[in-house]
Amino acid sequence: MTNIIALIPARKGSKRVPGKNIRKLAGHPLIAYTIAAAIKSKIFTSVMVSTDSEEIAEIAKKYGAEVPFRRSPAYAEDNSPDIEWVNETLRRLKDGGKTYDCFSILRPTSPLRQPETIQRAWREFLQQKEKVDSLRAVEKCQQHPGKMWVIDGVLMQPLLTGKEPSLIAQKAQEKLQKLTSPLHSTPYQALPEVYIQNASLEIAWCRVVLEEYTIAGDKIMPFITQGNEGLDINDEKDWWYLEYLLKEEKAKLPNIS
Image (cartoon, rainbow, N blue to C red; front, side):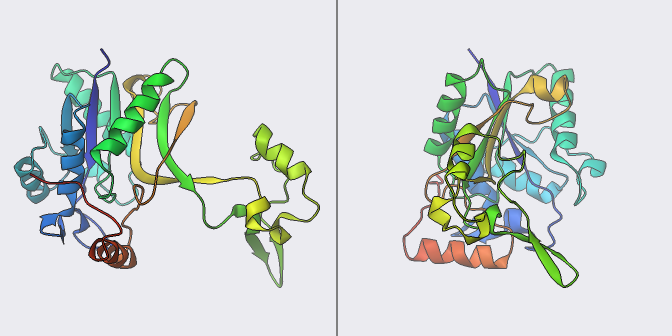
């Protein structure tokens, strides 16, 4: 049986939305909804919060998460890459006798992710487990890179012309070959589909961290989120929009017992 640990990162520092990980939303700290979704998905051997904050640690434990140790300050800076704290966490757990096959990063800033979302992602990952290193949540982009520009002095050039090596997927190339106008002058619906990652969910084999020092490996499969599952809180505008969705009953939070 493949065992997996949920890793919920929650630093105390947040510039754009101060204290957002424990800011109250519908009566509970924001992080509580991710903890609840992880626990109720029933796929995890452990649900752990990685934090450098005593306050966050106490709140996380109140809502049922494990917080066996604090994250090292060196790995809790604004520009600290995920690989640092994930590597530290898995190695410290291993040193303590706890080993896992897989890990999943569930960020507190995606509170609309449901237990069913996690279950669906886990099923899809297991179906391809022999072929992939990791799974990452994505959604169709609203602002297509084919309509983006780079400014140079008084002129500008399109970011993409349609001949870039980055657009090597066969289906994308086939669609590009049928276009009769530049990407920037092509209707969105006629452009190759492009997806952007969101912060709601990642799953990977622990070996990609412990052996390759990466959180994703080379073979990354998509997990396409549905509706508002991938909504991410980055600034006050996002927080306002989330509260609006909840008020209008256009979205729902995971149930907290």
